[in-house]
Length: 377
Ligand SMILES: [Zn+2]
Image (cartoon, rainbow, N blue to C red; front, side, top):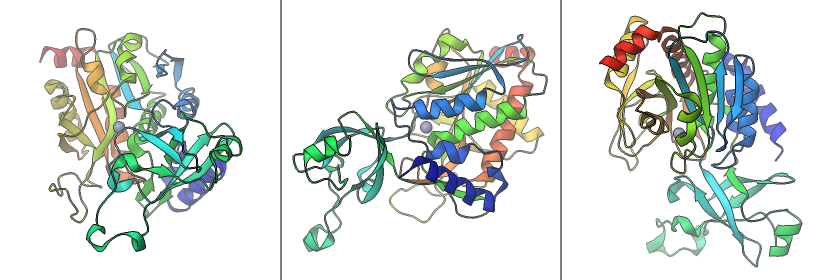
């Protein structure tokens, strides 16, 4: 599949149904392949978008993109952060009969990995692959509902021998594998796409930077697009060094559970269309309480509906900066999506737009006095 074709189709479909596409980087960002450790194409796209509003853009030794905003060079340092990588696989080995074995980059449960289309990024461009599953005709009645273990996954690219895989398809160990899944509008407000975690966060930061470009800000604004979040928050561990933030706002996805019951017990706590989520707890971080209260108050005064989210099986980059230097007041803000860490997820553009509004308000209101007040508790 050609990447350019994917992109054009996605954007055309989008603009046919929604204004979100007119200026929108999200369709393009989600269609890019960028598993953990393979963030270059995403970084190039984000860099291009930041060029408008950032005066200094650098890449650190981990591969994180760091931008410093134009304009005001006084006041507290405010950091906006989101990660560039998505969950996927890396090619581990090739079998003698031409199948491809892979190792996971990030957490994808075995229930969603078989019988799917994938894309392998080769030096000659992307090629299509399929994660085969036993045909139902081959499985005993008693084992019909059984799932193979996640490590059993293999990819079929239509090759007949190991040699064909290597020479004809130009595939070798170490290449990235990402879902073959195009950005697609479902309705006026809802969209289906891969890698919403966390390209939604990156697109949001880009939109916030554009929306406040010509406004006076009482702070110095930094943005970080990080690498390797999905394999253990690795990129974010160096972000403090180049930004020295007084406050960190990490932008992520929230985990919506507003669909018919499957396995999970939790239902209906976080929903699409009810606004951005403010994380009050996750496995990696408890937010700074005064920062949380200050944002809640700001949202209320501006009639922005928010949801309070707690996730026991969730970690995020903000925690790495929170624990850097002598500690940084930090919070994680999410745009809720359904079906995170799967072939594709669904989000509602109204949540996204409200999140852009909220984060824009935060960065235009965080002045020295507010930051001192927050820090003093
Ligand atoms: Zn994420």
